[in-house]
Image (cartoon, rainbow, N blue to C red):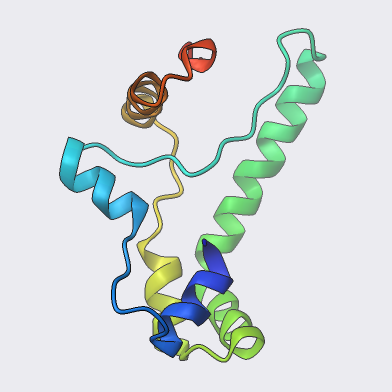
Length: 120
């Protein structure tokens, strides 16, 4: 599980053990973990790609500036303590640098998804 569902499940203490894939990966490899990426086909129109990229960056900037508001909304929707939601959202890595690309390619190689190893 990820996101709100994982936070709610952890808050209930349903299971005696809980593993955070990102933390486990970082401890094992000393690399960041990439949970998701936005991608476009190489044949997509360049202007559309740039517009989407700019929109995603603006959304990230807005979200980082409003983490307290987002945490309050997540807490309201899930019943998870506000501090827990704020810590979770504040602890995520929202970047996609060369270091992240290298880590993603490493992950894909390790899981045998060779068709996806070329990470632009």
